[in-house]
Length: 577
Image (cartoon, rainbow, N blue to C red; front, side, top):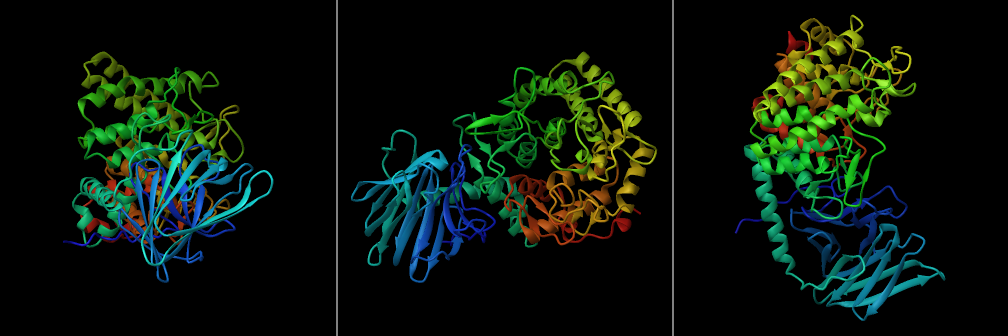
């Protein structure tokens, strides 16, 4: 029998979880009590750490993981973690002792003993309750009650001579009553499911000797981030992360859908996971999770771009194409009906959050802002609507959308081109905003829809302005006085901006430059993992270190590029000459 391959993940960056689970195991270092924790990724959890796992009483533990099982070791003690369904975890202890250090830190947290082998954790900080059953071994429970809550509680499970199994169940008002399953069988089923996912979405590149490890990591990050329909979520949905970014944001999900093009039903589900929550005015939410919907902000309308990308690759079936036309139409119209503040007909962002580039320097002096990327995305969305309309027999509407897309590009060029660059403007005054943000280069996403002279001038400025670092395009050039190495959208390299930029360059005939940009980014991911963003100068992973949109962009690029184009990048001048 072949051994199950290990994943090689670092729990400090990539949490152990599995498809369908709201549990994750992580090594937490940003809190006072460091260590390995069983955590919840529920949307309404105010505090995510449930219990700290102490092997032989210590905070350190070695780890190795397959898709189905995590094994923690310290000295002679071993603890296997297997997850089952949305809210059950099995911990098997052998060769020593495991202590569950309950994170009783919220105002009304309490741990109570139900029987000789069963405890309940009323975890008010997580907005959940947990039932802990211990099968086998010897237990000792120690707790401190301060008159209102448990300020400390620990459950020690000793299993020196036999294996003890700890079952942790999440529940609301009634504890689960279903039979227990064999953890080995659950681990094997999870591994089989992941193997199928990796084979589908990693394709042949999962066995590539040069990038196979990164492809498998990216496949695991996306697979493990899936949570089931339930609560507010109407279908299986991919969270952005099971670290801290535990939502489905309304542009992140586009990149996740695009990575699933080989399975059109899965791709459509990730697109529709957000469109399920479109409001009566046509607006998409900022984000959604199992517990609720955020509507203070929105995200940029890249959905049409993503839909066309999928259609080009056979990644959406006819039913999905038909189902998307009306929601996409309403989302497009919303911008012109509800975000135009003057008589120029140009929509605005109310905040950097609306653009997806939260703190970009285009928003450094105030809001609302008219930004050139927005009209570019809307023009592409109109082109996609024309395509969908024609596919569904709405030929007059298709013609109207094509005309409107052309007019939108015309407005973009007339209003936001200053002769040598695109700029953003203060909505109220029309004044040019002094910003070097890469956001102002996003009209390049239009590809050959952008007039050639404007396109060529913008590309020259991109190259001459120092944006393209060894690791990809910096969101603020390193020479800018506003550049910050860990400045979020003021310097670091991001997957979405990289993919949008490279795709537009490729569609405008700049294939060599697009290849070069993608190669730099892929090499950065291979070195630093699937982080939220990367230091533009060192390539180090920053912020949330396990993000699905980074993994999804990596999978998409890997699937579309010949092997020899992934290995090396030349200078930008060499590539575009």
